[in-house]
Image 1 (tube, helix red, strand yellow):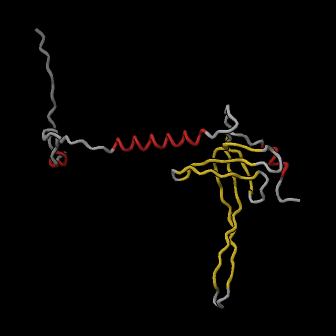
Image 2 (cartoon, rainbow, N blue to C red):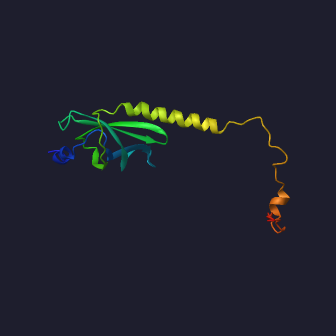
Image 3 (cartoon, one colour):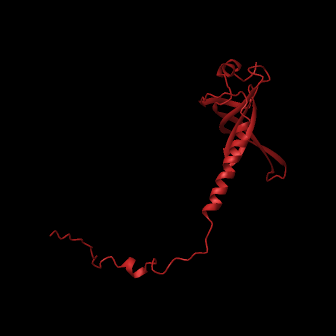
Length: 162
């Protein structure tokens, strides 16, 4: 028997366009020397979640079934390919289902890259400086800004009807 619930994972029905949350069991091994100067290995187990868009599924619900998930982490696109029945995967949760017209969404890679380039190009344009200087009449002195107790002259228009 395997520690994986094969029937449950087969019934998930993962397909391209789904947003999934995959919880992985990760075991970290640390090697170090103790006070007795002998080599010691310590295991540190933790769970790591990876949430993203399913780009493709391969081999369906067979024993060798795989699925690829893409997420953007800290502005960098990251793709991970998971075996469907891997014992390293603790759980797979479908967060959102989207209707797509393709079985493989590999075009999303280029689409995301273009969007990032567009954002960078727009950001560069925002920080451009011109050689024009502000006219002295438009500059407000600090005294005028700080002096809020001064009476404000209101303009009034009077119409004279003859």
